Each structure stands twice: as structure tokens, then as C-alpha cells.
Image (cartoon, rainbow, N blue to C red; front, side):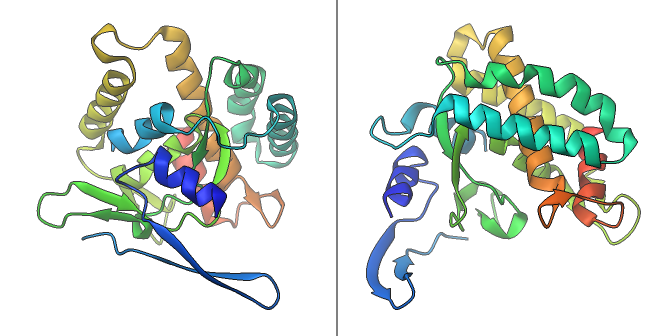
Length: 229
């Protein structure tokens, strides 16, 4: 529940309020959350609002974990991903600089977890924070793809909307504005965000039952469609 409280503050207005009710046998915790009606500000909210009191993992240990997982993917994923991982892995240390915030992030930003106003299309809130983790800001930015396309039952298992490039450009323009204001975001921080997004996509979609995904994996086909385009 402590992490849920931190999430409520980090994503104020976007995360539901959770209330503890009981503890059942076997360590099952019973809690309720209010209904959310019905994205740039959502993603940037944690950058500014994550409470200082939130427990954070050791940066060196977290870097070691990320590095180990990415090297595991480099060894196990199909060859077409190798050049991307070869370029990505040496850049991972920039995510663990003391100046870059560690924030709670959603690990499952699928369309059924994103609530929007059906008339205006405005995002109202995000639900299902059960598996939330703390990591470098930007790791969950791969969730943007959920808003730019739809999953299909054939081909690459993913199809972008016809105007996705326009929407994508608008998203990044607004994200950098909300992060940096009129002065903008430095090239170093833009690179950190790019690296964090790719790391998040690989970690979320590159594994299947704890090992590198195979060609039969729908998540792997999605990963290829969004990182190799």
C-alpha cells in the first residue's frame, strides 16, 4: 500500500485512490479503488511529483539488473534485434545518473488500462497499478505506442493509425514542453528519454516466461514493429 500511496501522489489526478480494507489468509490484501470516468501530462507528472519519501532501489543494483536482462535478450532474441541492442546497451548507464529521477512507472499500459473521455478523447486516468515498479523516468514511455496503433491478428501483430506520425510528433513536442517549459529539454535529457523508452519496450516485450521470446511470441512481433520501423 505504501507504493500505491506514492503512485497516487506521483500521478495525482490520473491514478485511482486506493483504500485498504482487510488482510486475508495467505497474505491476500483486500483494497478498493474509486472508479475512473469514461498524455503527456500523465507521463511528466511523476518527473515532478514523485514524493521524496518514496523508497528507491539502489541505482547501482538496478543498473546491474537492467544490464543483465538486456544482455540476456542480446544473446537470445533473433538476429534482427542485435544491432539495436548493441547500440542501446552501452547507453544504459546514462539512466542511472544521480540527476535523473527514479519514479514509479506502470508496466502494463495496454488500452484497457487507459481510461479516456469517449466524447473528447481526453485521457482521464490509468488503472491496474498492481505490478508498478520504480525505475528511471521514461521507462514506461513505450506505452505511447498503445495510443498510436492497434493490435492485429496477422502480419506484425501491430498496425499504426494512418495519422500516427502527426500524433507522435505532437506527443513528443508537448512532452518536452511540459518537462522543460519554454527553455526546452537538453539534448542529453532527450537522449535519456529515448534510451529509457527503448529499454522499457525491450524489457516489457522481449521475454516469454523468463527467457528471450521466440518468433511465435506476439509480444516479440509487436516489439519488432515498434522498435525496428
